[in-house]
Length: 155
Image (cartoon, rainbow, N blue to C red; front, side, top):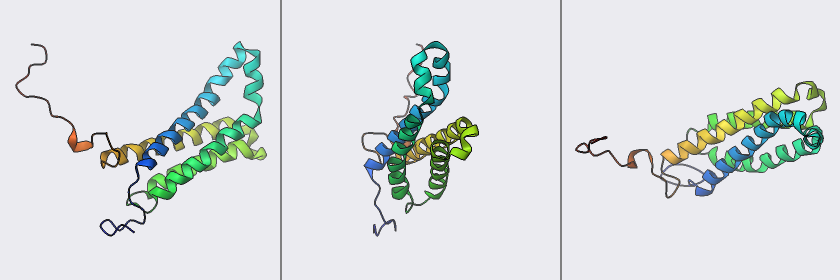
């Protein structure tokens, strides 16, 4: 336990990378769900790929360990509850869209909503971590260089 902050886990740089990885996976899922129907009309091979349930299940299953790791690290941190709730809801929607046959009629809107929610939660968490200075080689909110008042913009 970190005595100074009362957190169970100290801030972790790896969590920020996992946030970006999870957001990237969510973006990949959204591209798959939104762009593939357009490609279906253009390429017969894409039609077969878009109907493949195994691809949906692989994408959803890939998101689970990455997202759970970040949620586990964020839970003890102050203010992580909203992130965990949004990410867990998005992840649950992705899993319902991929694995629950009874929801197959609404698979696309469920999956898109889950992907947007999960990706947005990870990006929001990443920006919060960055603003706190937990990500090395990234300027924190107050560390940005200030503009020179003597310099004219176009002169």
